[in-house]
Image (tube, rainbow, N blue to C red; front, side, top):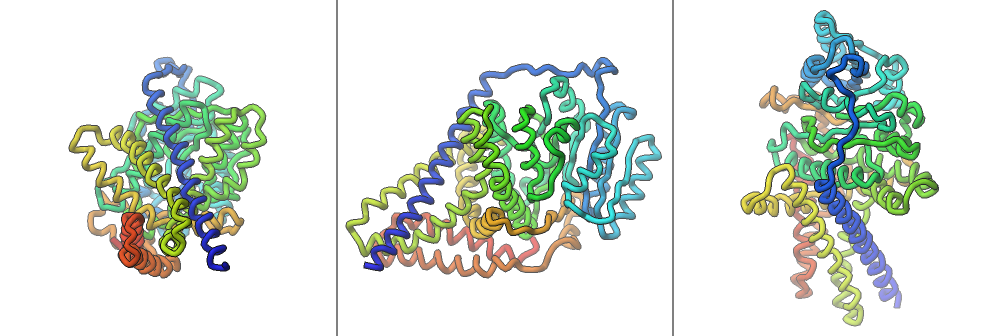
Length: 494
């Protein structure tokens, strides 16, 4: 009797996880429909006329950096050469560095300043508030009405300001965000997977939400804020690890409008080693959960927002929490095999697994449109896409344990400091990038559990053969490979 009760409990949570993921996929499919409709209905927005000097506003460019010796020169030189009247912009280098890169940065700034560019080296006595604190500190003395933000690994094109600032002629526009590009997309399997996932966010999700005036988020970099929008929304706050998502929601709840420019690409460098990608994923997913905890009640309580916008907003904030569902489904799928074999009368409950198949088909469809947008269509590209999709799907599952820990920490309020993602400048340093002093040789404590999960899902594969039940075999093989990849790569620096 006890075993039967336990079986029902396992099946309940197993089914719940599958259903929740299915409903999330339906929301993604709705965003796909929004995305496709937006391509048919393009509306021209009012813009500044830059042929008139009087309409060119003053801009402050903020560059928050922390120990960026490998990319700081590229960043400063690129930004200082942006095409814009030299008397109409200033650069704030918000330098919280604690290593010898401070002296390197100072020398580069002096060289740039000697060429007539208004550039300021802003140093703080401590890192209170981390990136959010640095941005807030710089805002106090910013002269511009518009605040451009670039992280250290971004390389904007020279005409970037001319492509973005004109949209602020409409005084209701609070933010203009551009799409991230990836200068090292094809460097390794890891960078290809990250680019694949980010492309979906920066096409289907951002356009799908923005086109229907749902909540979207400033992505922390490669975008512009109206200074008065930042202040009206309550300024930067550092109580979550994703301060950009936090301020974005506060601004939109204040009815500020966001413009997302899919066709304006801002190149950047993806983390090239697993430890760097792992820390970035952890920060993003924990920050997302923290923002759900902070903002969900405000979204629900808002009186001037449609029910559909609230629904998409809540799912957006719950985005990282889907890893909890994936992990729960994965862990419970092995005992579910034995329950199905032990209690034939419960087999009807296992039809719920069909929802996961349908979910996978929906995601496959959605991601194809984003892949085609970036890489082009055609039969050859479609077959490349199939391979890429299942590779991404497999390895994403391998991240589900550590990302679930991040989500739980965020939901339960465990605080942790902002851990920066090491930058490499791979294109310039060639093989020397492996000598990066910021790379951590410390193995994450989660790696031990991930190693055990490799064995656990190997047991799941064995169980399928033992019980002559192969319905979950592809799923367990993907989990075995996904966790195996993450586990092995955790011990390598390349």
